[in-house]
Image (cartoon, rainbow, N blue to C red):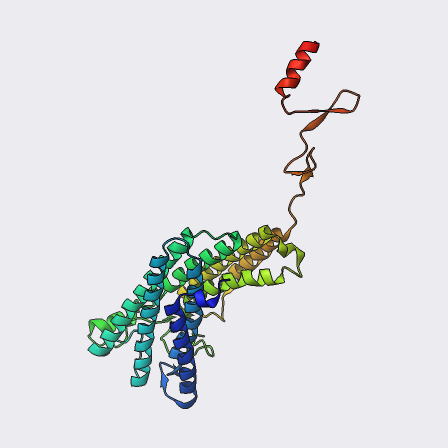
Length: 350
């Protein structure tokens, strides 16, 4: 892994600012007892700050792997850092004002802030897309590393894209908008209003679906898949099978496909208005099928490969030997064509 000093500087600086914001928000959670939309008012900036720390550091590292279009990558990373900082400024400013940041259209000023924040999210997504394209074109020697990084960034783009689903008005909001009485347009929850009973810390709904679940799971593939490969590399000295680069590649393939299916599963669950912690029979069956397929894929990836048969020169060959036994004398005749000199000598002796 390249030294951290070579990482993308604006993203590293942004990550440091978000680490400081995590501390500030943590203090806010302890000393500020205000509640907004059913959650502690400082919970949103705290969660966003933690998420941005790991997201920015992952991109800052990945940009060191870009081999073509490095200047483009630098600007894309800088755009992501600036757009993310703009989003956090709005979120924090609204917390100080005691107002919602997301979906708030109660006043022209609140609506303007929400629209600006929507623009920053689109810019952030576009910057990440540029980085993803550069990583797809990069020459990364280790195939398992290349797959983990590319699959991670593509799934992160999909997860970020799910945020668009949250901006769509609910039927109740459409009706209120027609009456000119809509204060909120968009929601995290599906099938129930935002602000109801929720899971600790995450705030995900326990009575309906929640689009933040696939949003979170998808975005953090950016860290999960490369970390999975790092774990395999760390275990390799103690697990002989993991020393084989081909085995690690197969395991990363299994992990990437399984993670993508997991993202699809939690999205399907949320869109059906179902809480993450209260799955129905169909969700449980799909989860069991995914777990079984993942286990089977892992077993197949860890199985020893077919042993190669030594060739006539002592080196390993991919298939059985091409030598055959001729007659009863037990001598072997090669299927390779005779050398021209030998063939001429045979004709003269004949």
